[in-house]
Image (tube, rainbow, N blue to C red):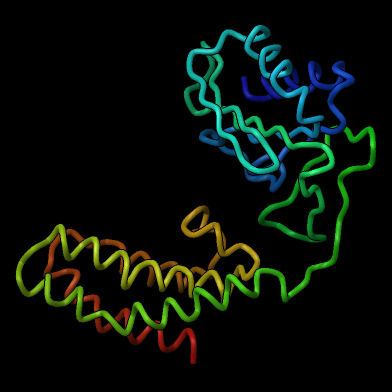
Length: 238
């Protein structure tokens, strides 16, 4: 089961002295695990030792699907252990010691960490800084204002009865700017989350409005939402 997977992984990592620290993120750290939660496990390790650790993981478990992602300060192995629940996908994030940022915001209930062990005191905490991500917020504030000013681009495809074009333009010129405006207002340091867990991150009355905007299956329904969307945007920013 899920707990056994986490325990086996953490036991293996604790015994491996190459691993400086191990922690959980996602549902385990937040405390909202359900039947569909995947497993977000993170480690801190020297960059040159990651290949051998990934080989060890693949030899330790019978894996039926696997994919690797490479980023600037981490490598990620996404895999599933054969015979386990299909939702128990493991997002295994190996962060480079000396390069990765392992400082978390105090009291953050969106992106916290649950420390399993930390041999070198690498995991630190800092106070919330309202200026963090200010540049990204400023960009999306300007971009959202521009996009919603171009709402007629959506309208013309609706009037032409061209649903595919209308739907794509609706996403770009209505949905995206509204979502980023909501992010800027309610989760200002998590702009990059976009739609991820947004149902948990905005007030219920705002979620109801967002659901109304998202539930469209025809050009008529898109057209009917345009004025509502424009007015809602104005109430969010003014």
